[in-house]
Length: 301
Image (cartoon, rainbow, N blue to C red):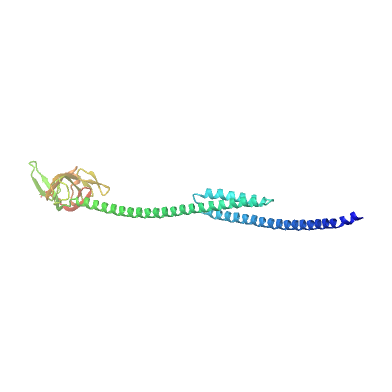
């Protein structure tokens, strides 16, 4: 009986200590459970944050890809990686601090890559704008140069035409008439077509210091009252048109006034020499330089 009495207080103490231990363990377990729940909520929030940041990055890359820059391929690659990560994070069932930390590093790396690509895109855009500006300036300069060249070309053409015209000799004192050339070589003027053997066209070549000295050829065209061209009917080019002429004379020109006469002999004197008005035209260097007319009458005296 005494042994049971002596053990009773000890047992009570042990029971009390066990109760306290059980209560302590329950409290600890309860706290651990609450902390675990709180940690899980925090990790889930951080997971959502990672997904949101990845979604924002994806939007950034979508906007960058709309510009179609030279580095669009790099933006496309980064966007593909982001889309893959979003799917990977969403599928994660067991979220731990280590997993979250891993994805946060990925997000930080992608953000750094985005900033570098943005800076590179800005540099390329600036360089492209500079190139466009320089190209526009170059095109403007080229257009201005073209306009200047066209103006200069027009002036040169005008000057060339002026010089060419300045090299044309415009005769003065043009006189045409019928003549009879005797066997002795003596020339007798006549206005009777039946007596005439030739038509003589005389004129004065003026002084021209621009024209080079040397051979110069003058052509004459004589048209009888029937509209027939008298003489050799050689063909020359006048203002891009073929013109039949009656004869020509080559002279040695020395920049001095010179008197020239051209004799036109008909091929058929009986048919080409008739009564009426004759028109005479002079040509030099492809231009008509003068004209006159005269008449021949019938009769022998």
